[in-house]
Image (cartoon, rainbow, N blue to C red; front, side, top):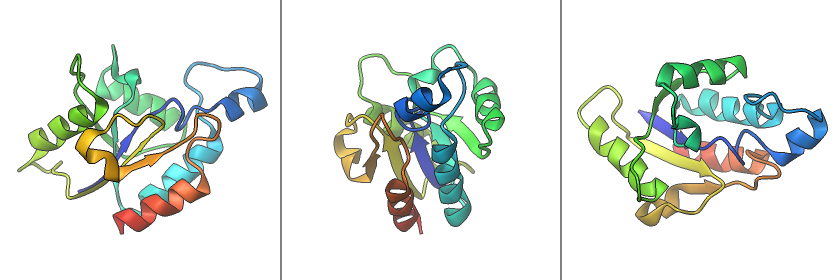
Length: 146
């Protein structure tokens, strides 16, 4: 399976969107970023695994609902929350546990506004909190996943 390991704040929730909308309802994503994410998913037949701190206190079903309300489907999982480790290690743990299942990761990218990826750094497409998933990030992700 092709996977997009996805953060939310600084990736789908941006300061640009917060300024433009002049309000924040708590679960509203920047629609430009959503369009770019959906283009990656459609072009590469990939699935989404959430790596964001939004995992804390939420079930996968709840995260899927938040994404669906914002027009994003294909969320299939979330990385484990492991205290005291960097996000890259949580991603590695997810991939190790998915081996041999229908969720086994064959190709992946990480879209995040943080750099804490350890040995997975080459797979990171780093966003800016201001703009999130831009057309440039979209195009790079598609290229890596095709």
